[in-house]
Image (cartoon, rainbow over the protein chains, first blue to last red):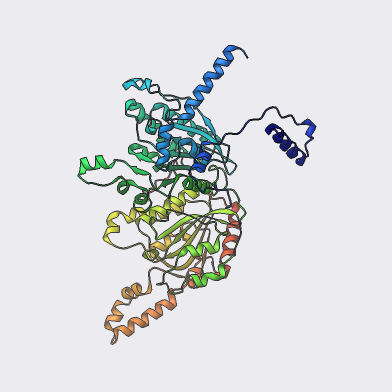
Length: 56
Length: 515
């Protein structure tokens, strides 16, 4: 199965779950989201990191 | 799309890439090899995921002296912008050590100032991440003027928006004064702050000292009191900043957020935590933790002036500032550093509408020539001044000792406390029994057939009459003597009642605190 088809199915599934009419969802393009510099650094250096969230 | 569009877009993309590359892969790798993040990575760690927006990314130096026009870097060695922390707006600057060593020139300073101005206009906190070799020498007086512009804004913004400095590398010379004016300073283990570095110290005074011994995080957190928080690395440090901001309002016209937590009332354990014998030590942090919402106590300057504890906590989800004498160190007496530490914290809380809880167990101001010659009169006065001047709700609990001038200085009724509670073991007096008897019973003891027995008799009489909270309660200096198990509920009730408190000071330009 083509990658774009998998992503399209995933988008449709999420839309359906959120009560959006899938016929009205148009996927215009697919673009891989690049990891940020920080994400890469953390991954490359095997750093255990969790961003502090309020109330923790 | 016509050719001109394509060319223009390509040019913009190239410029953006150049900014994003900062000092280049080699310098970024070097930064990483020392355990430090880059300026943009720090912004990413500081703000909520995906919310950081960079501003003025193309600003560059106008300097052409010393070949600077050929070394021009877009961004000029500092990243500035805004984003959201816990969903609330905040502004920040982050010096980029990979670009010209993060040195500060005219454009660099202008970027920081613009972000500060926006923070003031938007009434949002400002966070300054410092990692810089200092003034950019090639830009001469314009560099110095840039620092002055920042210091001026730090001062004007003081008491209006929370300002936090984060030192993550070198911070030397005049650059230290911006953090020093701000409300809180965070340092990482490998950062340094000093007005003059080891080389200058050696050439001027002959003293040989390493940079960490001169101005490392350990020195500033424990000896000088310059740093409020120390963390081992960038990520944990920026998490600390996020944690602190969770207790603070956006500005002086705002209230702190209510953060529902687990309200646990462990007041019943207080009589086990605090020994009735006023000579026995205990850790006052256990008292604090038994009162505040579970896990909410966030201590500030924990390694400096350990005889007084300060920090934020939450009571029924609402932020309070806590000041407590720590019996574990110097019996909880007040001295120069403790007075400075507590006074500055009280003034911060008062500036930002954070109610104050004071836990009192204080024998005295520390005696001795070292303290007198160091100016304990001047420094101790700051504490009296800060409490008297504060108009936020102020609640005190006298746990055990409250003697003499130190009693007055620890948020007593006379200096404006709204509600003063005392436990039944509290001893509120001019001084401890032994000292008092040796003065007022001196002749009686000397003339007695058995001086030791006479002293014992006078001690018992003094203890019975004065070493309790009831005379203070009868005279109205204590509002209520409470049982330990009532402590949390009474304090929470008092703060609840005081929510609508309005107390204003007479018009003045500003007071003249004894600095």
